Image 1: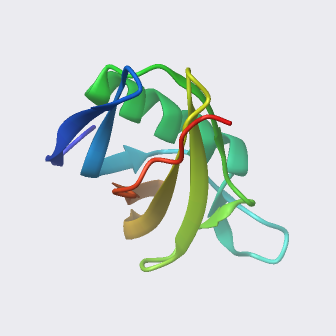
Image 2: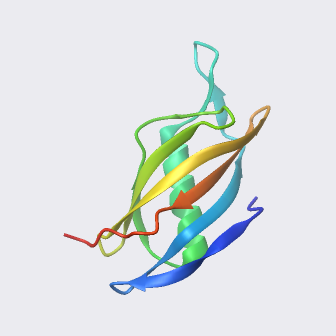
Length: 118
């Protein structure tokens, strides 16, 4: 499912996070709204981002929060917030790179600055 992963890892307050990490993901979780627009549900985006970044970085991901469903349209973007196990936060941008039927590929780009836990 993953086709590319680039970036480096840094340790912030004992948590390893990806800096500049790019992951290309393919999902077969596209649905069509009553208006006819294909989407990837908010929950699917959040859980996929969390599991993929956790697997790729080895860091504990407490949660990922996205503002809503992601349009299954090339170029559609969404900014999410990842909360690590220690409470530190990292912005993540999700961008749709390809749509083929019900298969949606999207890139995940993590910010380079981590917000420390309060």
